[in-house]
Each structure stands twice: as structure tokens, then as C-alpha cells.
Picture 1: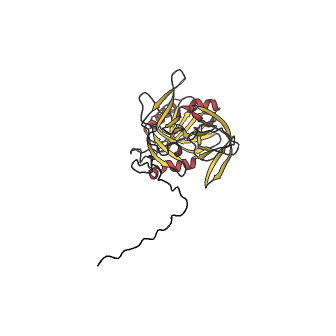
Picture 2: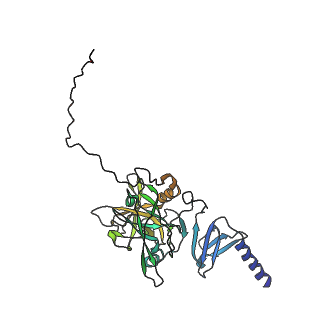
Picture 3: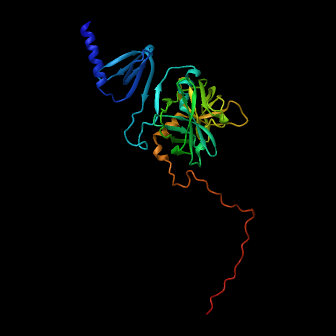
Length: 323
């Protein structure tokens, strides 16, 4: 038994010392964390490359699996590691709200309110374009959980607009770092694998009612409107929910809430994460330019004609120059 124990000890030391190319983290139910590249996932086993060996981990012993897009060391405007994905277990809505509720924020502008969600520890936040449209002053309220379990409101001013996409109704914001406050990001779903009938829920501030939770199902995953495919859901959505996340039963964001049909109940819509990922990965193409007259400044509309009729043509007599 001694040689075997010695071999295991050496393997663990090598695993810690050897870096791996992909940041896949397996969190065990025992509290241990294993970092490596997930090579294969079977029904009851996960195969992980830890650098010096490939180990097999029973699925029943895994608490959580986290994979993060590789981040670069450049400035945020060129960094591709903006959002995170994770293979999460199914939980109740109550558990998921407790776990990911801090990642949902209230967006405030001089013209109204909306919702948003934090996608990384640097304070990047996603919301709808129409929530911050024609605005330059944006504030965010973060609901931070204190040590006693209660939520405390932390209002943050001078939020920076990084990118805007009016075509798919996306906006990317940056919340400045705060003292004694760690951002709690949410995870983006890896794909559009949700189907009709799957359970979903929304967290937001409808009509200013902060941290409201509404639960429903996916009515259809591919509702076409004006050439864009939306997720239709029965989760109750109202003004103020715009820009907030639509979660699945694993706590992954599957869509960004952006509208509902008037005079109808249970007819809400969210933009799928496939559009969101494309926007985030190509955010430089939609970078916000404060000096552009179309981004964030109010202009008076030109005066309109009061007489709808065509103006009469007045003939003018042309005098010949004197000789």
C-alpha cells in the first residue's frame, strides 16, 4: 500500500504544478476542486485531463462543473473572455434565486427603469438597448447579500456604456469596482437546448418592484418576429423586466427579456443566448462612442410643416443686367 500512496501523492503534486490549457473546474460534493480539460462526458462518468493523466470521476460525486472561456491579459475592450458558462445541476427556483440573485441588478436612467445581469467579476453587465437608449447617465443598484442573509441596496453611479446593438436590443455596461463589494456573475447557457415545456423563471424589477421573481415555462423556443427568433414564455413580464435574465432550472441564463404583448397575459419574450454570445464576442463592432451624435444625446426634432399641401411655385421676374 505504501508505494500506491506515494504514487498518488506525486500525481497530486504534479497536477498542481502543471498548468492546463482550458479552465474546466470540477467541484466535488466533498468540497474538493479538480481543474483540467473535460475530454468526455458519459451518463455516469466524466473524463478529465489533469495534465499528467486522465482521471475518471463518477457523476454522482460531482457538485458542480464550471468552464470559463479563456481570458486574455489585454484591456477589456479586446478581451474575449467576457462571460462564463457552467454545467450546473438542477435545483429548485428558491435555491437558484438564493444562489444567483445577487447577479441581477436594477438599471436606472433619467427616463426610466430596467433590469440587467452581471456576467463577470469585472462588473460587465448586460441589459437591453432600449433601457439605455439616448442616455449618458446610467446608474445600477446591486442587491448585496449581507452576513445575516438579508439583501442590502448598493447604488452605483457613473456606469460606463461599452457597446450598443439596437438591432438585437443589447447593451453592455461596465460597473466600476466598489470597495468591500465582490460582483456575483451569473452563467450563460452553453447552447439553445431548452425545449417547449421546460421550466424557466425571471428575476427583475417590474414597475420598479425590486427583486421580483416570476416562474413559467417555455411556450415556444423559436417565435419569429421581424426576422428575429425569440423565446416565448409564460413567465410574467412587465415594464421594468426589460434587460433582465431568463433562467432555466439549472440557473443558466437562456435568454434576455425584452418585451411582452400588450393586452395579453403570459405572452413574454426573451432574446436567445445565441444572439447574446455573438454580440459579446463581437462587441468591438458595436463599441459605444460618446462623440457620435447618435449615441446618448437628446436633440430637438426639426420643425414640421403645418400646411400639408404642396407649396405654390412663385415665378420670379429675372431682370437683365443693365448695359
